[in-house]
Length: 494
Length: 93
Image (cartoon, rainbow over all chains, first blue to last red; front, side, top):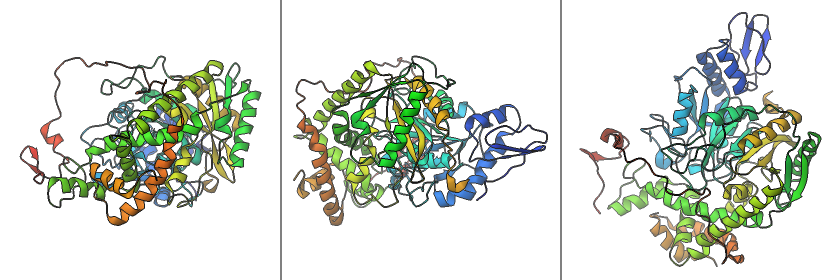
């Protein structure tokens, strides 16, 4: 299907990327246009914010009925800049925010999340709220109470999750950039499966004020875009200490937009356990190995390292801590002050029936898991022990960073799997997070960039750095991205 | 067996979830498998290891003790499923 075309001002010069020039007219190809290019067009007055918004609006009308990346879209853009899509865990004043759950159907926040407010202040008008796994619990966006999102590379497959709506929107040219959230890998993994770039920032660098909470010691909001530079530009808008979120800190240095196209002087560690874990598809390994070779050619020093227990104990550690924190965070959904209410008797019956009717299976499973792990008699063995495993994971990563600047691995063990392939087996679904979880447990930032295709589907390359090393990740990611030359427009949409 | 069906019933009650019999049967099996898998953490001898309570070494992050406007009452009640005057109305305990 041809992308939507939009008439521009007469006499404008053609520019690379999403502008197709012929004589004096121009068109917007939202599939190819990067946010940086769009910013340039607007700044130079070659296109108005309204026309830009219209181009995405038309693309959404054309492709979203099939893909279902959006839960809701905003008609009237507020602001004249490059529009943005926000994952539906981000509170947006007056605009329905559901966390893809029935328990928040019709809920309209009375305030903006800090990240939403910062986007507004930067004149990034809201395009709409994107689909996700309910309460950010999942790795495929199939747990949404409003139906799954489809992968733009193959609509019979998942986009990944939980930020699958955001990554699919960017990949399909339905938004120039988006915000997602990442707890166990929910930005990095769907970015990998959709062939786009996603950053999970250092814990504490982006405000969680107004974010529907899942696991408070793990949740982070981050940028999703077509290029590393776009991600850096968006990260600059949202990052930084927020007085409303006492778990945020000042950035030690300002966000830098990467320029360099080599990796001279960069020490890259390849953790054996992350790269040789069980379940990694051969096609994924091939693409990652090629990228590591490319890194050598760009001047990086590459060496092997070990994370002896982080991978083996990472998943169990996460699937104890995250559900435990979730069982507390989801206690607020009780039918009293907002959201769904099901009355049937006394107030206790209201709580129980509201929650049974409002929550899907995965939130119920995780709430019960967490409640059990925190209950008297089990706390020490489960949650208490998991918190110690977390220390071990942190220490192993710290040790690796004494010798290396960046650690690399596949982002996801597999390329996008088919819709329905893992929904009957929770443990099989959890395995999708095997490679993203360990660094998350240590509070470390991680960038996923597309590095190639396997069976025609995108493969993601994960770069992990020490706390507050985003600039280094952007530099490395940008240089690799230029060398790889991945075409982020899904083949079937070209 | 890592968790019995009776324990699942108990946990559901603690979490204020009114599960149907079908849900209890289904979840009991799944939770048992998951708990079995996450119980792996107990393999490690971590007596000498401190717990990580928080990813950043922050302590005592204070806000200035300055009065500021609170959420207006109408905003607070804006999404109320049932209200009466300035209060949320709920069934009796």
